[in-house]
Image (cartoon, rainbow over all chains, first blue to last red; front, side, top):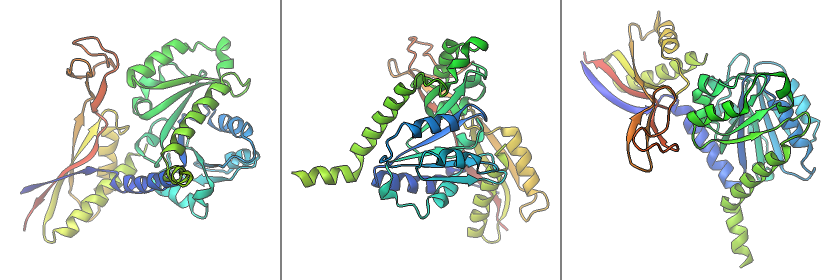
Length: 232
Length: 115
């Protein structure tokens, strides 16, 4: 009997494709964000409101994942930006290959911002890297403020926590302070925003966060470097 | 419940190893599952057994090593295991400590019998 060390990731193949995607996004200066939450936390409405506020000239594209139906893609397409639905036919998460396939035919050089709305699920999407620059976890105040403790894997991997539906705070026993504290226990470096897509409260801070990340991604891209050199 | 997909990925890797070692009988595969991996060890064992049963790999066994979350303090260098979600440094009280393990989902080894 002999024991042979393997020492690699179980999701080696997914990680390989995700790394390729990340390299392609980097090459084109694309900021890719992966939105995760439980079902009904308000990912789609937040994306709708975000898209609505962009000028039509903005180079934004959206991939949206669901187990069934293209309802979300139809909602998001109203803003006039390119949107594709990924229907997972039962799978509880998006993986890197689904994203790779969904991008086929899109000209990446025409995109600056790629928003991916994952399947509503706080467990499984945590394991699958999609090549994104950051995961954004949306937690609505209609849920429990202890969710970061219940689903630590997701909150550990997300860079930004968006506490959504804050217009409902008067009607629910949710404590923003508790939620923040719980998120920071799991992930001490977590950034946190509070907003309501319905009333628009907090959307400006969210847009500012997005713009800062976009500026950083654009500054790092080889395209920006080339342009800068060209000017000299 | 994505443990079935995870178990499938483990078996794909095992089959690839088996193909490189003709004649060897696969006995066991070892994986490391961190508490922050998002993978539930019991569900993974259950899925693994269901996939192996009646397959060419039967009676391949799965050994799971649970990996707790550990942090390192950037201030005093203390490394510690996180209990009850408390990520503050037990030595100096620093709150912003860094995770050094607990998010593993790794294939550690396979055990084979050479014929």
